[in-house]
Image 1: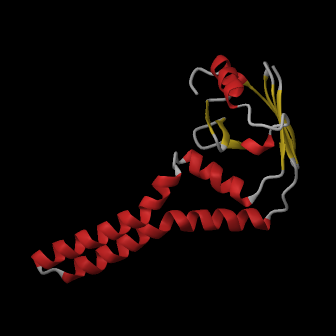
Image 2: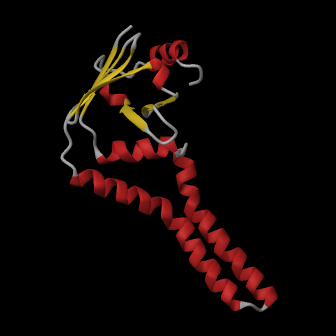
Length: 162
């Protein structure tokens, strides 16, 4: 089986890859501001009963950081991606491994170099190291639709875990 994907990476692709790497869904992302507010309220309650108002200030600062940090990271990813001139990237998934071409050249990973892969409606994220991952968006597959089930069966056969 040979599956091919071609795409020009967008800023949203970088953010999607980051979210998949962190295993965040749409709902989890919205919980950060709620968690930040809850943390600030908790510190205010503790400060009220202990009469240590500096804890309230610290809790408020910590709550703001907790609520904003994930959005800041995504903003930085988008900003960084927009600064770089995006060029077409191609992937080919074969029985021997994964071949890819980009502006820095061509490379091939055999399946034993791919540690794991994650697959959902957004696309395919595969790891060649603990923090080294590549993302192929669902829109990139040359067949015109995202061959999720075919890709899932293919990856199961090639990798120990998916």
